[in-house]
Image (cartoon, rainbow, N blue to C red; front, side):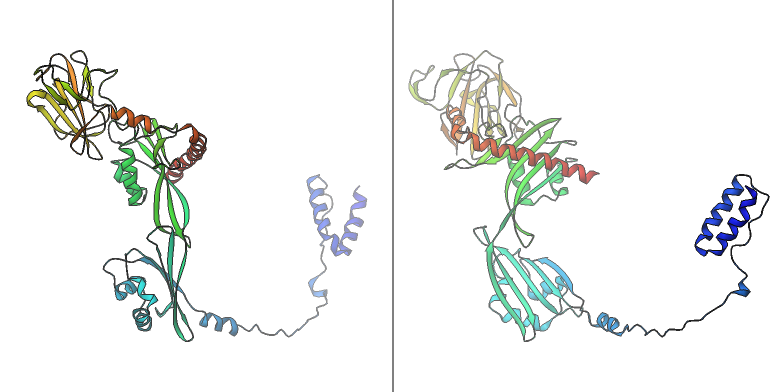
Length: 444
């Protein structure tokens, strides 16, 4: 094999395209133990090389056009603000970073432009200005009184000065999702989640009526929200309704959504079709037995015809008495013929009264939820036996307590709308699931 190697290397040297192959071959031979021959240089002596110099004129690159374009390219500044009740053109321009006497003069004289600061504050204003703080374009948007449309003021600078126009259009409805975990309170969590104040207020109102919630949310509990916004040009002009909410307390999930039956007033329902207003009030005893109904009767003690302003429920002494609805205790003590007496004030100018108790287990000023323990059945005051005298008042006037049951029956989803309700509920479940992921992504 050794006698074939020198001619092979010589052939490879004569062909410059094969020189790389020669290097590889040399490495292979060294690795295989063939060491008797050294590899001759693959390149001829540098002194023997013929050198030819080529000179070509190349036109220089003209960078003046690029430099000039960089010098004349306008710099545009973009700023946005919300108008305030105390705003003038000067204060608004100052916050927007605009210093333009001509623009201020035009806006103060132009009829259309006066709408900028006229009427209700809270208009969304955006501007474009040059590097000298001169106004190039101003746009202001605000919703109409009906909340379905918007107005848009556009002021633009042209070669002949400023022009203005007012446009009208339809607001676009958009659905927003968010969620948060409570650290201190519901209000603090809503603020941390940047929930709009109108939606936070609606959320608190719904939360107050969710069944089985006996106390406020505490640290570690969470909520998710689905609500609508009304937008134009990608900017939110106002918030709409709270569409759905989820509360998770001690691992127990409560989901509600807004639903409106045709021809009926809308309200919030559980996703199983149970109105939360339907369960806003309940009778104060389990399996109550009416011993004396509401209306005129012969008083059992005085023997005279007298209006009975409540309903008496016969029950063994010591039977627990529970609040008919969420509210605040405004009286807890002795009240003449009522004996031991509790009065609870509820929302919508409603109140409930509980009389003849054997013991009272709440105090004045205490907040109670539906089903919270108020006391126990007794025979205190003017009573012929152990019973609960229960009154239901609206605007201070006694009503038939059985009205609570009738109202509950009226607020169930009808069979004719059940299919529509279930379709909306299915969508809401997906949206609330997506809302819960917002908090997880934010936490990550």
